[in-house]
Length: 153
Ligand SMILES: [Fe+2]
Image 1 (cartoon, protein in one colour):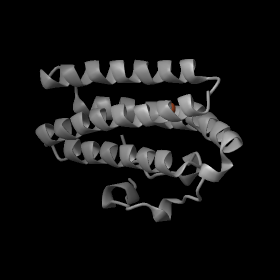
Image 2: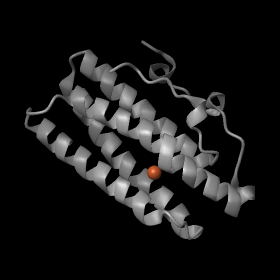
Image 3: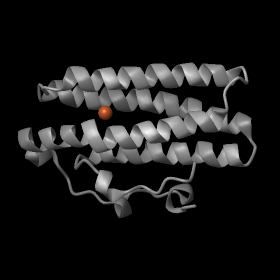
């Protein structure tokens, strides 16, 4: 897995959600860096933080869906539940040394990119239609960039 450079094309146009997606990517990169450095304990700590942050982030997205009576709430939430279930199982396995932490990071990176590029962008469009005043201009440069996210390779 390579470090993930945040692609601005994946911004959904909602400032808070975009900031949270960026934070998820930052955590993934930190987990990857620790794994590459051979620090499995640190990698696992970061993955656990990522798991907690993911739960909070999903709750925020789902609250927004409720707020606008989003028509695709059920399917979107079921993707969230499935990801959380899969990652939780993988991390629990990691605690016992049966799963490579890097594999969890890689799984999560693929899932996140696919999910943000699909269901989350659709949600962003729905938020824009219902409440255009809640949309604030965002760009990667406005985020508190951490070194691990800016680096590629
Ligand atoms: Fe989502």
